[in-house]
Length: 457
Image 1: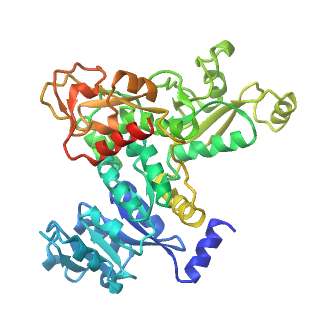
Image 2 (image 1 turned 120 degrees about the vertical axis):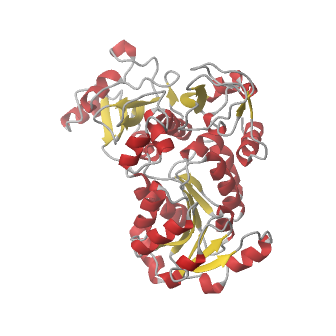
Image 3 (image 1 turned 135 degrees about the horizontal axis):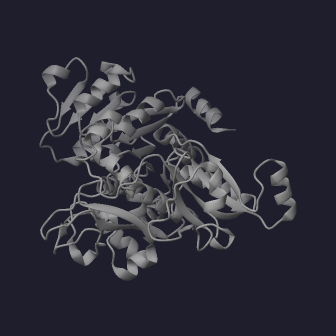
């Protein structure tokens, strides 16, 4: 029985999968719109920085009617006089009695309604939820959310790849101990590429290289200021857009793929050649055969017409299989290509929700410990005392590197960089080490990372 049939069966029995979504930016809104159309999956809770705009969004797209919207407002982010006819508002400003709050959010009167809150701590407390979805892209927020969701026996589906390459292994281990699934979402490039990898492995094909297409120019020194107008045109957050343009996002995505497959970067930062689809089997192959790779079994990215797709270059030592591949017009060998010309990002997240709940299986997660991660480099000269603004910001960019190299040299993972204070002057393009910065106090992310380093390595 496939996903759709199982979901339809659950829906007909009145037990649709209840989900909570954290973050209603570009990804979160698209996810809400998608889930609203999926049989057997319901949106039961949303945590958002801006309650008012989220209510407007929910009503505009008729995801819920006013009488079905319950607002838990912790930070007085909404004017009740304006929204009294659009939602039932519960003002919790200043309240710290979490046992009482938990009773409120689990009221039987709210079971068929949607809870909207400006405090993400609320969502894991909702007993009716089976899945919590992290659509924030913020490692610190994602760490706290994942931890609480796992401890409250919720499956966690994350679009926060930034957090996964920092603390994914410890979250996987904790989720297994608590009988739930931790998974990066289907639809983003790591999961889409892993589908090709799993297919090739099943057929005993030799994986030479796998990765993604990059559909924008590479500029390591781009920042939210230089990209604000472009980001506004695309309806994107300038910090998120910067992480795409400066290459950090591609590094993070390919580190995620590396950790889930055992593939490694051939060089620090990967090659990132400019190439069209037909050239991949001539370029991303060993140097001895005219390519650019020093080894096989690597992750990389390509700038060219492959974007927004993903690829896998493979070979086989079977003359019969090679002959069959040539007969099937898969190329002339000795290297062949699998590629998927699209990835649908958040639109594919329902696949991970269904997989976790119905089959107790992830779409993509680390094999065990980290194999690769992303180093932090200074995007500009950084003065002692300056606060780093994290991924996609003004201060830093990231390059993929082997985890073993990171540990040996005490390099700072870029997922931990936001909020760090420089202890000394750091020159442009200099790699940043743990000793160069002060880590923010009370960081759940850093606490989990330390635990991961101790227990998993």
